[in-house]
Length: 117
Image (cartoon, rainbow, N blue to C red; front, side):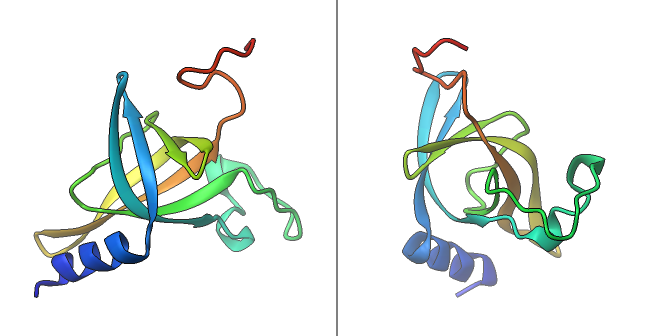
């Protein structure tokens, strides 16, 4: 089994169901999604953060290589909605292994959200 197929298998087996919403179209995939830890948030978006400050509005995403993300895509994970802040392919040589991204929790203006913005 190749490295990329082994990673696909692990993500599909242990990851969470994720719904990608792009241009009104929904695609279901799987990914490992976890809170973005404090040490990784110190200079996110060039904003300095106090060492003890943490909020739960950002997530770290590792997803299947077959479903690339782009900045601005919307994701639904476990009933919560996120926007892709940054996304990259993680490769080994010429082989893409997985998609890496930082997500920010959305609070207003969701797709199919009828609340006032």
